[in-house]
Image (tube, rainbow, N blue to C red; front, side):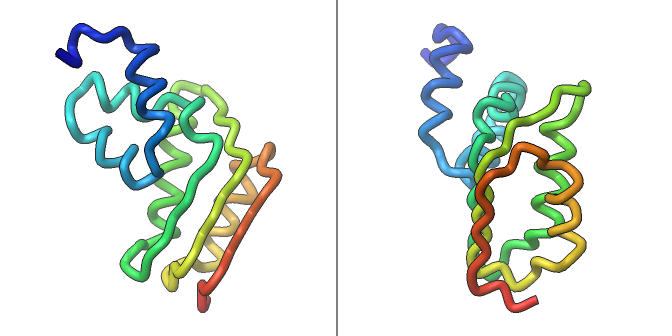
Length: 110
């Protein structure tokens, strides 16, 4: 049934998912992989949790969003409880997010 829906409808549905859920949806199929990494879905990124390697997650997210020379429009980045966030991860954000207007960092010990 999902195969019959147009891409625009699926992207609209995906727009209501969290960052973690979007990453998981990208693993469902080839079609969902490309739709899940649509730059319009990535205006806001929220990474939380002690097990999250925030540096690696940020590097991977920005690499995938910037493929094919398409610039992303990330405006809000929230990092909560990510003990594996370092200056290296923040440098990636500074280099790749010129349109970032809101950055929230809480309980990240590094």
